Image (tube, rainbow, N blue to C red):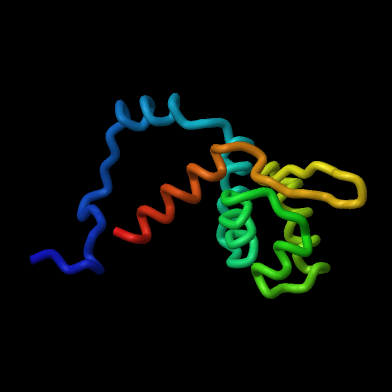
Length: 119
């Protein structure tokens, strides 16, 4: 039986052919950096709750504050981070500002992660 703490190769060898193939398929570092930033934003409890809420309907800052039990100021800060990362967008309607997911890719990411956690 293999112990979990011993799950590394016992020899120092790598397959150059595989390395070349995978390296060609890897995205550029700036894209990987953007992906890391996206996952960093998704890793925060409040921001994730905001995104899950916005997957249901567009909401204003006050709605999100009530849903998350967080101050309007804190929600505004989180929304600014999410907007800068292109995870949410907004529209103005008179004096009101409504937020929604920037696109359906965000919803798909959250849904897939939810399925994974439920399994």
